[in-house]
Length: 112
Length: 115
Image: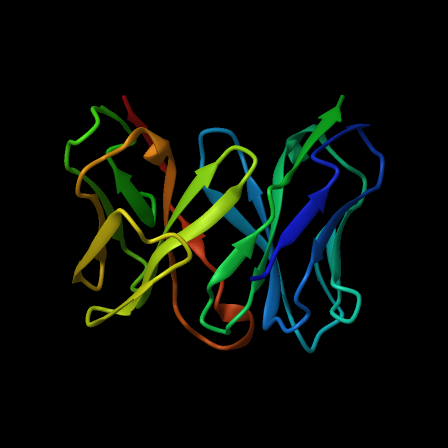
């Protein structure tokens, strides 16, 4: 069974700092790796999806990378803002049927 | 209006009661999913449906059942609720496309407490 781990569980940074969130997975045979954002009291919002054949995806200040062989993905956030404060979740699609295995998330706080 | 809606948003019930959580979507997606989220465990897939006639068990389907009444509606039932089913439940949809299009869109969640 795929296991997805996110470290650290919580992170606080001052506004303007660049930061990296980490995601590791035990089974490298994935179809894609997805990053989501979760705000308190709300559902998840998709941020980036990296296909297994890709190395990275970018959207605005966000850049996600994927290294299947080492079972790792990172989410890079440039020039962090207080509005980036949220919990960030990564999820691995194991079967191509969009059956996602989620990590437990990293709770990010950006301090003004 | 939200694309994926869930009702109720909060529910408190007692052990042994039958509970139905409902999900509706206006995105026109074929695929729908039910997850539960527990502190320290992340989200886990309960059931998923690729169309009205295609329903599949996820990682933790025991104690749950589902009904896909229409393309837009997917309900989750707890036949006899127990306290360890206390959790935050999410519905999600996707269009089942290839590549970058198979993004999942989530509802706002239903917080269920079983006493």
